[in-house]
Length: 232
Length: 408
Image (cartoon, rainbow over all chains, first blue to last red; front, top):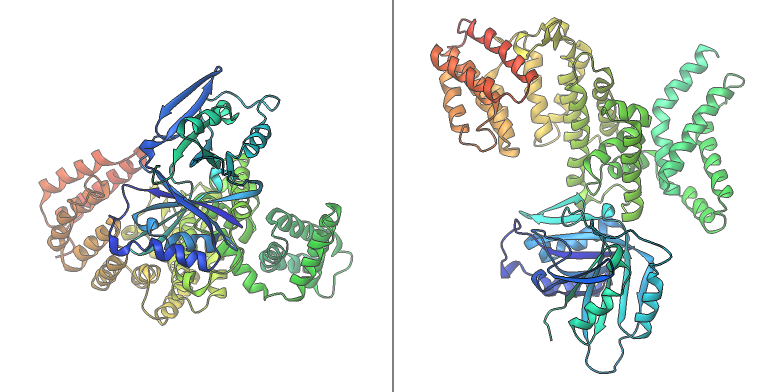
């Protein structure tokens, strides 16, 4: 099974100590055993933009999709036999100790991958598709996500796209005092829920926001867009 | 139906149901299908066995449940790949015990919400109906159905394995299983004399405890938690009189269930031979001290205080520390207890805990410090979280203030 790990900060976690930060070892080990497929670090949540379309108007706000104490700092995609193996991978990540990690399964059906085009300078952007309490209702006739996907893949903008399992299927992993704590639930209790995520190759943030505003989920939910680390 | 047929079937339902469900879940990975097919097989047995009793009743149930599951799969046109998988699984089956243990560990997986773990354990391992589980937790059947569906969906969607955890994780995961059993037990144990549906949970928890001990005979804490449940439950007949709850010191000990008490003490002896005792075995040992005493006066509080001190090092919760202080007060006199209790008043979890002030008031009374005792009772009553607790404390106050100090 494939799992997305949301690597998150947590103000109540153990303080950062460089001696215990074995991130290079983790990446090397997970690469060698074939578990890790991909993964990237994000700019801080304060650098995120959230896009909503309400009554036909595009609204862009600063900050992530939900105001929480915990923030998404990066992601990793892993492939494991079952949840226990995925939890073991997550528990070895240094951010399980210095933060918290959400382990979210995703469905193969929603998987989209396209080549990154070489038509001039582009940067990669992280895109989170979320539900939103104040959103307009989903209308199947109008909200054709597939049309958006087809267009963005053909333009070389949508590099990867995933449909995640419900946030109720998420598992939280933390390491505290060298003990692995496993609990039910997403990284933060919010009304909004992450339903999918994508990686966009765009000329700049303005283009990432513009193409996101045309995604139907900006109308029946909200979309967070954030640059990867470092920002170029 | 002959009594004999009914007797055999009732007994088999108890012993075989969980085993059959566990085996079908392992093979099919489908929890609802497994539960339904085993249930259908049992219903068929009730119909058919009075006409002709099969030669091997347990095997009959297993084959019938298996065929029902296969039929359902064929009807759902899951032929080919999945049916071949079935044959492969079935020709190399682990023992039924492994399946039942895997079922328990899966139901109590920490990635499931605790309420889901508890409900699923009762439904799938203990074999209660959804309606019975709902009734025990005082929620509607629809709510309980949703809770169970949620847990089963997560098992499937998140890839929670149907397996006994490997040795590296087994100890941690066993703590979760023991926690679920003990939570279930306490739900039942806390039930009032009229709350029959909730009270049955204590018996279910004891039944699950027996199963776990049978499957993990060398785990001291599995034996310890069963001993603890029995030594606590044996007091139930004495815990209520016509007026309400009766605390341990005032119970009529001749009403205690001697069979449970003896079994609990035997299990305690066994648990104590399995290495360093864990928190459940220590609590069982404390309950054992009470069980062996014929009255409060005859109780070995010195031993109890020592056990609480060991428990406190493993489980330093505010309530354990409070109980330790109380035991020291009974063992060494009220002033020694008061010294420890006063130190606990600094604890954030206990600073406003009504039972801390009640224990303090009781020791002040025993020490002859009447005016301070009266004041502490007032504080305890003011902090009582509800009318039930207030009423209970009123009773304690009257009893305590009328007592001639008995402990030097």
